Length: 443
Ligand SMILES: Cc1ncc(COP(=O)(O)O)c(C=O)c1O
Image 1 (cartoon, rainbow, N blue to C red):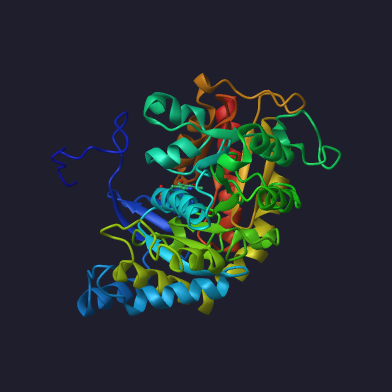
Image 2: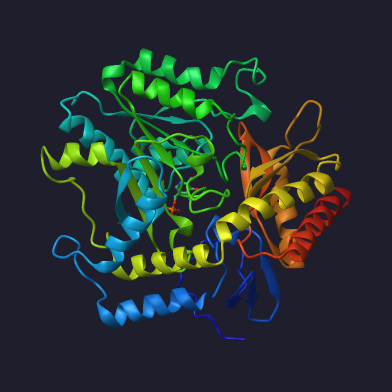
């Protein structure tokens, strides 16, 4: 065992983390050669599997060819090619891509971009952002203000700009106590009400995860929700920013999750799986019309970062896309995702504490409740999902946790395997989750 000097400021201060020494395919290995099935791709990041040689070679070759190139001085082949590649896959006229390092950064840039688009179009009174409760958009101050997870925001509230929020399309726990479709999408209409009340002339953009990930555990909006949201946005000249940092890049069985709903946002953000988790890479994509508004007026987006448009990261992203295409992995997510969903529903829904199983492609949520009829959640102090997570970790399975689904209470397990997981591995995983839930509640 290697002695660790202990100067790291670790992610967890409350426990000693094991030392990972290897990651290959679907598995991570620790220093004692214990294997863990990575069933959440870390934080829903790793999509093509760990240790991909093609990505390693592309990154290596790019470093030796031309590594750091300042994006305001030169352009490079990898960033140009990656932008074209994404534009070909993106819906509508989302033809322009800007590369950054993390999802939070991409959302910050998108919020600024929306504001600048309004200025260019002569609508300079539009500056306010509307988000949704129970959403996550990142760790920086702007994205933290935009998000709607109270627990994450409260300690930093004095540092944050005002945030306007509407309820999430969370049918399992509808904020209005209604049911789809008789609800007539009350949660979408709440956006219209919010814009009217706040003053449409002040509202710049609405930001939402196309398919929420860890926040409300892969709960899909009703089919027509985003169409109604887009109509409301268009009516009030409010730009629609869709955050696909978690649900993009094939995670839900389409390259862009908004393709499930047949809509074209004004701005879309990507991150996490954009380079398969191998190297930090994120992006925003924007419609050509908005790009032209900037190009033909002030001439430049007032935004720039040392590590934007990094050719090495872009080379990693290109290699990742090549893998996803050559191995038809996005199509695989679509078909195998249905199987994974069926397995989860058949095996877990009968358990007394599993209130709901929902998801799309390779992003699934399992919501845990005290009582299935009343949907009463477990009190957060019981740390239910943490307990189940620990049991799974001990058995060698890595899943993701979601909390705060019902006010500050509520627990869910999120499953987001790499796109190469085999049928047998899916079955092993579901069996292990079932056993861990039973063991936790029996003990
Ligand atoms: C939907 C969503 N947006 C943004 C982010 C922030 O991304 P990052 O952690 O790379 O800054 C996350 C991270 O979990 C996310 O899930």
